Length: 191
Picture 1 (cartoon, rainbow, N blue to C red):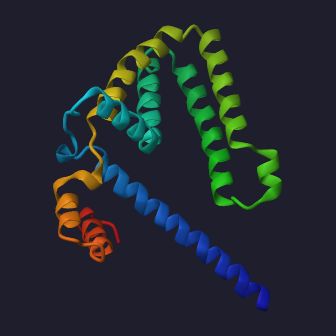
Picture 2: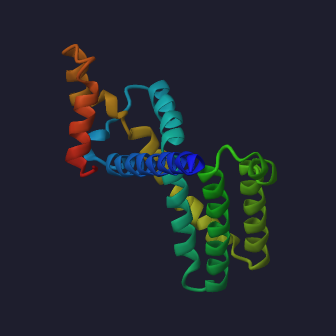
């Protein structure tokens, strides 16, 4: 009976971690394109710093945008290629989900390396695009998506530098940080 308590606590921790991840994702999606979060950078160095920071922060969002553009460019004529790409993305997501769900599994981490799996999927997708002569559609999707990503990453301002964040910092609200974050979570609709 004592082992069941350990298993339940472990599964409760996994559920709690999943809830926190879903909450963070929901917050990130809500903050991704707020109009007040955009401003022109003061100089080229600030633009470069913003771009690097935002590329790190929103890399999943940017990858999804590029992936959707690629799938949209393949849809009218190359449905088989599109379906293959969707299947390859499901395999990659399944590998990533396994590694995220069981991060302490030594066996799984030895068998499936995240970078190796991603590289393998990218090589298979690249070979498949070349074999089906879908490289022009890929280049079109990249030509549309990369400027959008770069514009977003350069003009997107950090959330903690918006007006409410500056007011809280100037008011000495060190203790109010979690309260303000909870208030913002409630305004965004998270629980």
